[in-house]
Length: 298
Image (cartoon, rainbow, N blue to C red):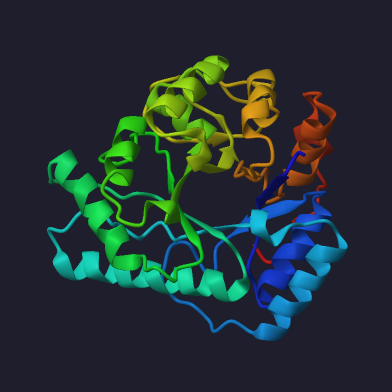
């Protein structure tokens, strides 16, 4: 089954609004932040919105077990030079996990962090230590480490770094992986040979650890280490290669999430989702987007 959606908003009506927006795009899953991704300001969750959202999902074929949350970018689990900041990141992510559980969502994606001036292996061990600090036996949500492009001092730029972290997590069944096609491309993975990458991943880590795919084209050449997303089919990866990722039988029933750029303040997701479902690239997609701004709150 194709489980396909995009990033959506989490506004005044919280996950209910997220669900409505996803449905307006023709999606059967979605990804959201529980507040602004650039800060840690969070409003209390309201049960009435959660209950209405779950009802709406059930009525429209969205499995909440396939819905994805994303932690804010400002979390850095990798660097302990500033111990106060590292402890704050740990405590905040722990609170985000609790919020996800309160919503009934199963997965939360996190960027592993930046090593800055520390040695890479020290930083990777710091991430594992942070996860051991955050996770408990009664933790219900799974933290997904996202594969990164290797921009600057990012950790998680290859599967070996991801494995290094996973091997040091005590409750390893509560940690998985989120692949990002743009990040993989920019880190040096040839997406046209994606099956070879999956085989290597399976041998080193195990395909069962992959719980989410961020599907993005890239504005950069393979190995550029820049991390600049492009709309589906309008980048260097290309439509056919991304279709092969999305419909790869080894990744069946894993949520695929679009994080592609808005076009002149208009969300492209409805058109991109339609292209993907039809398996047909529309070179005129940009011209066919609605001209009015999306007023959903983003």
